[in-house]
Image (cartoon, rainbow, N blue to C red; front, side, top):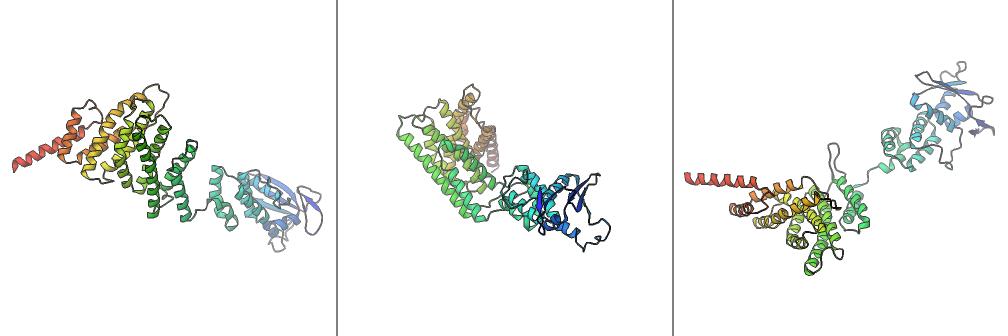
Length: 430
C-alpha cells in the first residue's frame, strides 16, 4: 500500500521504517501493543485525529518523542479495524475499487473507527459501500444498532430502512390486496401466498408495535371491492356448474378454480376480521350457500370433491363464528336458514373427510385441528339465539338423525331443557 504526499512526489508505504517519521502505537487493555511505522504527511492529510495529535497546538507536542510516537487505545474487538483504517489511509479511494471492505460486517467495524478518528474520505467510501451492498439479517440488526449513533454522515446507509409515507404504504397494500384476491394462475401461487402473508403482517398488532397500516374508510372500501370481484367470479363458476349439470367438477379445470376461490375466501376472512368488515362477506356467503351445497353434493364421494368440501367448511366455519358470536347480526329467518342448510352438509361431510385423513390416499388434506370444535360451538351459539320453536325443530331433527355424534348439540339441548323448565315454573306460579 502506498500513498503520495501533497508536498512531494514521494510514494509512501506503510511499515517502511526507512521513510517513516511517526509510529502509531495501537494498545489494548489486554496488553496488546503493536507498532505501525507511518508517515505524518499521510496521517495529517487524511485523518483529523492524527492532524490534531501532530499539530503544534497539541498540548504535549513539545515533550520529547510525543510527536514521533502516537498512542491509540482501543478494545481488543476493534483492534483489526484500527489497523485496517490506518492501512486505508495509504490507499487512493476514488470509487473505482469496491473490494476494499471484505464484507458488510468488516465495513461496519471500519466505519466506526473511521468516524471516531475523523477519516472523512474513508467514512464516505464506507457509507457508499454499505448503502449499496446487500445485508444479511444479522448484519442489518448490527447496522440498526450502530449506524444511527453516527449522525448525519451515515444517514444514507439507513435509506432502505426509512418508513414510507402513509399514502405510499396504502398504495402498496391495496395493490397487493388486488393481486392476492385476483385468482392468479397456479404458477403464481407462491407469489400470491407471499402477498397474503405480507398483507396479514401489515395489519397485525403485537405487544410491542402497532400495526404497520392503520385502515381507514378508503382502505376498507377498496378491500370490499376486491372481495366483491372474488365473489363475482366464484358465483359465476357455481352458476355455470349448476347450468351444465352433466359435466363433473373434475372436468374443464373447474375443480382447481373452485378450490382456489375457496382458499382465497378462507384467507380473506382473516383480513376482514382484522378490518372489522365481515358483514358483507357473511351476506354474500349466505346468498351463495344454496348453490355451493348444490354443486358440492355432486360426485360427493370423489377425493377431489371431498377436499373442496373441506375448504367450503373452513369458510363456513368463519362465517358461522361471525354470526354465532354477534360480530355480524342477521335476522332470525336467515340464521335459521344457515343452520338448516349447513348443519346437514357438515354432519355428512365430516365422516368422509375423517376417513380420507386417516387413509393412505396420496392426497394430503391440511386442516385446522380446531375446525370441528369451532363449528360445533358456532352451531350451538346460533341455535340458542333462535326462537324456542325453531330450537325445538332443530333439536328434534338432531336427536332423530343417524349423525347425532357430530355436531354434538348436547349443550344446546340442555339449555333448551332448562329454559323450558324455568318457563313452566314461572307459568305455574302465575
